[in-house]
Length: 366
Image (cartoon, helix red, strand yellow):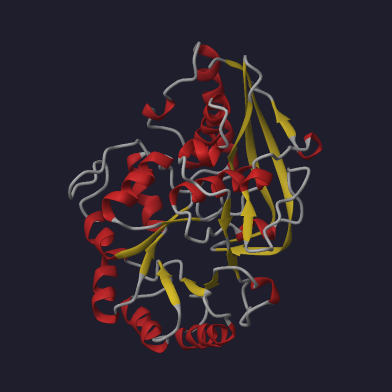
């Protein structure tokens, strides 16, 4: 498989409503697309979309790094084993992995999810993300397996009341995912757990300022916790280089990771922010017997389709957290993804077309 052409494009998509993210309020979503074409005529796309407030790199950093990647791609006869490099930003690692995996799948005449796992189903379940201030189960939750509620911006008692109100409206069999984005200290997290006992909470995602205290929180409350930002920090530290996870050791991960992996009920993997390879996440999940929940970070349909395929391959029974896509008022795809039915057909999603009108070409050199 030899490369014939590689191009970079920028996009800028409007959001349905202003999006508050830590210190930033976004009215539009910017990102970069990488297009690779082989001499056999196979075309594959990858996406690098740093998320303000969460990514260490900004879009200009990502653009510079992608240009360096293109230079490497043009210099080599074959597509390089590029993950041995240490300097790539997470979003760029995500984009190149995505494009290369898609090229390999096309070369093997397989859809991406089947290339990653021959037993992967042809559809992926979806979780619904509630907007800030929503407290009741919306009609669009029908057929979804999970609903995610953001907490941590209000007093703990108010957040607990919101969770109880929402839980009372959930259809049978729908679980509740709570995401605090490290908003609380140990005492506030304990107060929330005690106030929501008995609710169908699938997991509490990153409740603590200090993740080292998560084992103590689990010991005192028996809550189920999920790792998100912590996983991204580990991945950035080890740059996502695949390693064999054997026994009780995880090469490349800090020793402090082991106590957290022992108590984790789920790993929330955002590929844009946590530059693990699919293989590395799969091995980490298998070694510690912790399921992986794929999650988006407000990317376009190019990345969202890839993440859906990853989800089908890594955790086919779990609901993928791809509903950030619904915040976009437009997409780079000619036909937007249908995420309202609770399931996404991968055959339809992976057969996407990108609209040139939505893209701005990026010159390789200034």
